[in-house]
Length: 214
Image (cartoon, rainbow, N blue to C red; front, side):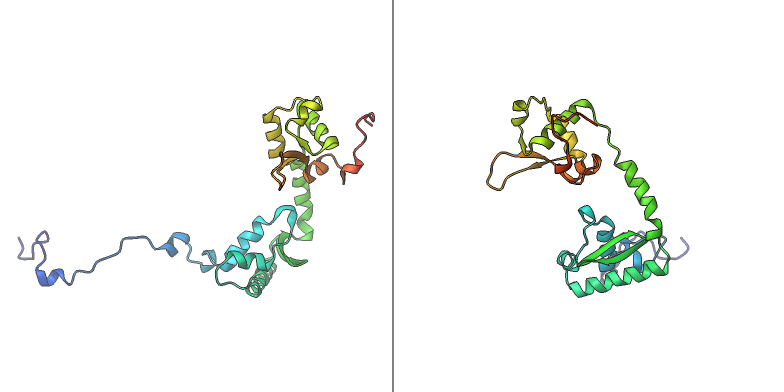
């Protein structure tokens, strides 16, 4: 109405060729970044992947080797993994973090610094407290003194081991189901967690089945 071009009209043929097509698909780099934080250290990189692996760790606190990490990342050599771990170690030390990255044996671990380990010990001791009912104790006793015990073996031992009880003990890490390589029948065994809960270093320290409790 004011003499300007109609905004709703179709563009001419020569103008249509000059229209810029915009890709509306998301930027994957932006998807990993925080909307309010452009710090590159928060992006997924070999350094942050290594940091995540060390944070999760391996069962029993075993060190994560540089060869293992390199095998899980593309185009990263074990020597580069060692350099990244050393960079993390220096960064945590400079930031005075309560945890550290340390070289142990042939690998790396993330752990609390010595002055903070007492707090981790308190938490672990509370987590180790396990409440077991009479049926669970009976099953554990049957396995501990007769292992390995096949599923049908509990009946012969006079133990009524319900599947739900066995599953619960496996979830708690007190029992494990071992499947033989030769395809034989799976059997139940106690675990290192069992030794921790009952405060013995080996099965040899268990009292005899007919020995009265102390």
